[in-house]
Image (cartoon, rainbow, N blue to C red; front, side, top):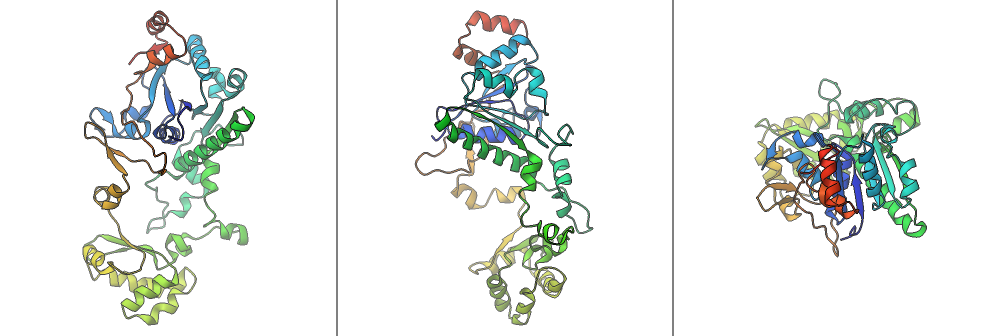
Length: 389
């Protein structure tokens, strides 16, 4: 696999870091999840459980090994630094300054392990006016302007179901880590990656930033092409109180639909800019889609070259064949379902381990790998510096 031989020390929690590190594990990296000795990653206890394991935790931490260690203890820090000497990547998601106070920040690690690519993911980065502000995804989206572009029918900001700044930060951090590992092949040296979720999600706004740059004013979501301003890029209710979507505003799709409905007179409206100019067409579509049930519209759209999709709930979405066709639902030996691997190589495909580690499950093995004997391990456990799962 692509990342065989790469060792990652994953100090991260919740979603962005753990998901990134799991992607690396799926593709062969040895990911050691470094957890505190009492609770470990909070996601161990968030949401529904299956087979005694949180579904959330399993789907962000499978394939990793768990090292439970007290990094606030001097001996615990020494163990981590010894382990860092064997690592290629260190990933952390604490607030700025925490790893330095613990004595395991990049300035310390680079002196003993110059090969390490050290990545810090935080809400606002390691610099700037907001760097010390506590924030999760929602606050970051609010300050970046992204949340203002997701509004309900009453014009109120609406919380998106996916956390865009979490996921943007995760994906860009993975890209940065891989860039640094690629460069290390030439220099032999690692680097420090300061990844801000705020920077990441803001950089993902080229499709909605136009009016700010060109006219110095905030965009109105109701007139934006991808926010509801385009009649053929929107969500419509059906006769049975379900929903369907039109997801392509290119004129060929507009023409294909309106010709099939014998409403060529509305094609010119579909060619107008997004916004109030398309209200007559939106009104027609709203009334039209209320004349059939969702299932009837699914059947009607079959074979037509029009961007259309029904709005499925998560349970319904699990039943469509595409997920199985792409192996995006996989099962462990106990029949527990997990999310599949989205990064698909032809020659060296991922081979995810389906096991999610117990807290401290691999502590003893990891310490022996870096030279500590069983007596030392036993003493560290007795002193509550480590936990053996």
